[in-house]
Each structure stands twice: as structure tokens, then as C-alpha cells.
Amino acid sequence: MLKENSTQISMSDKGNPYQNNITESFFKTLKYNEVYLNEYDDFEEAYRNIENFIEVVYQKKRLHSSLGYLPPEEFEEKFLVRQQKPLFSENRSKNQALECSEKVLSEPR
Image (cartoon, rainbow, N blue to C red; front, side, top):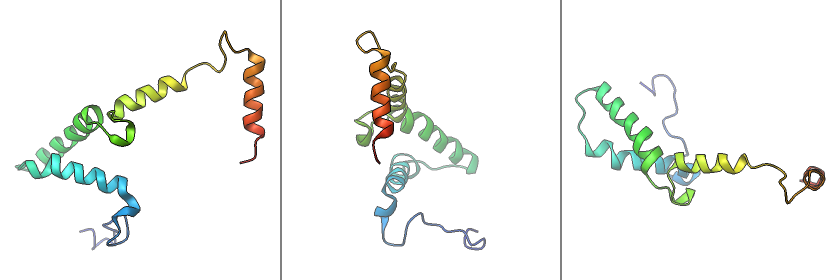
């Protein structure tokens, strides 16, 4: 079906999985921890099981070395909390914060 519709099946060049190693790693995890361990009666059952694996196991429970051995959901929560810290506090005046942001904005990239 994919070939009939001229759809590219691979996400990287043939024989070069390193071009898209994050995606390759995800699909390996999905296959070895869900798909190869189960027999599905129909497409709907496969869809439900795979969706559950991604949403519950992969996102909420499975530890990811690239995320400091945290599940993606927990990593994202901690990241967002860090982003919400105020630019200035009691120890840092508004002027210091503005000076700092001006330096960052004026630095060449």
C-alpha cells in the first residue's frame, strides 16, 4: 500500500540507521517491549495495546538515559517548573535581571 502511493517507508537512507537514531531507538523499544511479546486478534486490539504502551509505559514509567534516567513525562514536568522560575528574586534586583537579559540579547550568535 505504501509503495503504491509512492510513500517513503524509511525515515533514513537505506543501511544508515544513525541518521535518525532517536526514532530507530523508539521503534526498537516498541517492538521488543510490546509488539513481539503479544499476539493481537485484530487491528483494534493492536492499536489499543500499542497506544497504551506509548502513553503509559514509554511516557510515564520507562527511564530514558538521554533524559537523566527519568520518564519523558517527569522530565517535561521538571523542565517546565525550571522555566517558570522568576527572572529576578530578593537576591537579584530588576535592574540586574534587565542588565543580564540585555547582555544576552546583544551578544553575537
